[in-house]
Length: 499
Image 1: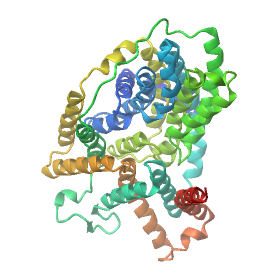
Image 2: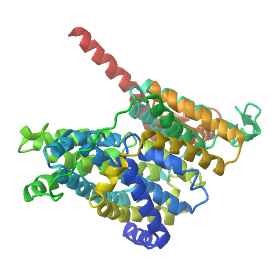
Image 3: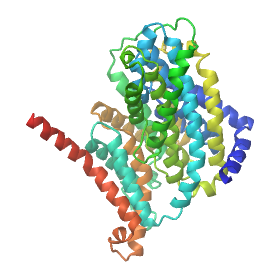
Image 4: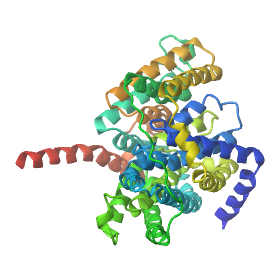
């Protein structure tokens, strides 16, 4: 009952005109960037961080969440009509959705994707509202050694989840951890890694790193691949409404996709890509018409799209309750919280209860807005694809630079932004994931404090981390998660050699 009362209070905050406007702006921008290939929610939130630093924290975070949900919706449009997913989580949707569009059933494909996204996000947001409070009651009892074990899990799982190899993910994480150690030591007050620059005494700004790696790096990467031939989207023919048979084949897939997507998204090692593939495989096995898969099966669109949006809501569970981001967008949203000196985690629900429950309530409102926006405005979203890439990314470069300088007018800040942009380009060029670097910068100082406070309490004895069952279990999980990818890789090579 407490969750219901708190949620009702959140709705009272969410329906305020200013917050409704923030939610509407977020879902509109999110859908637009989800449609545009290569520009995902993470890049957009990173771009808006320096612009929103003087706005109301609640409204800005509501807008960021709207962008996240909208990006998940919009990615399916280009996946279906252009066979070019706007978001990585929409890759599976393209398999059957584009085949349906080519056979003249683009309308029902878009409809089942939009309605499935609505159903999944609605159910998953309810789950978020009722799952978060019990999890907070457990997490609020954590001691410093427990926090350190939790941070280790976050570091390892984020490094293993993003990128083509765990080693590259760990390298990106190490870069972020190094940046996180810059500035004044919070325990001793001594300067660390500042290279004699007083501007670095406060450390590296999360917004500068996020904008540099995501926005500047992506723009430079696209510019380096200057050969670009735009494809023409497949026109939507006939009605966009689904037939009775389409409804019958879709609604079970929506529920199954939600059941797969939310738990995986809520795991500290979750994400949005894995559940979409699992959902697609499940629908293919359970379908009464498996022969249609590969030529345009509507379940192959309905299930993965529901899983995609349910997992997006699921990623907010570890982000809000534990302060752990499990997707690139969640990592940048964490930076958004920190720019207002708000640290997601167990204390967030007591220190900023109105903000949290206003955010959760606004997700319900944003979900309804997205359903209303998506289908009637399909023509508008398709027209966005005609924007020339040089104009688009040139605008991103200008917007990113001006926003960062407005937030922190400093030559050093501009030089750091440029340097991080080059690093972001090189990371993309050589297939190093970007998100772990941002996570390392944000969580590195917290892990450092937890480690040193634990050692102070134990008079320097590191066995304190193994003497407590909770921290020992978390360290064991982190160790297994670190070793497992290398073991599986070695086993696969061994089997190939035997064959």
